[in-house]
Length: 99
Image (cartoon, rainbow, N blue to C red; front, side):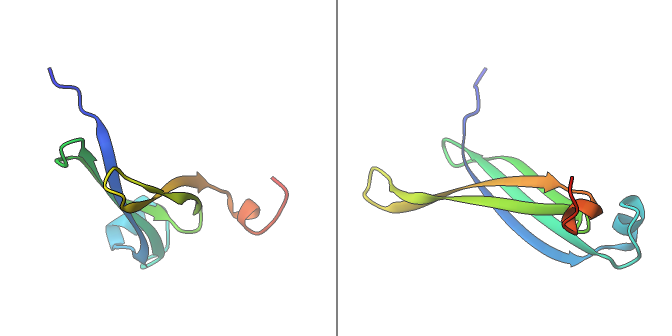
């Protein structure tokens, strides 16, 4: 049995109008703006091993990103590393009220 090692994941974060079904399932008004995330993870050979396409209530989620300084790989090329931490927040917390 081969054990998969994920080496690289690419992630795209954006916003769009939700479909009628998405808004109904997320208890949002029709055509509400949703936060979306599409992620593809590759193993150590570059083969895709995981894919996710997600929609979140923009009224309840925010992304906090931590950017780490660029590093150099074995070929001397610079590469950047980033860590994303999606956080669910209540409406009162997003408006600046004490948690």
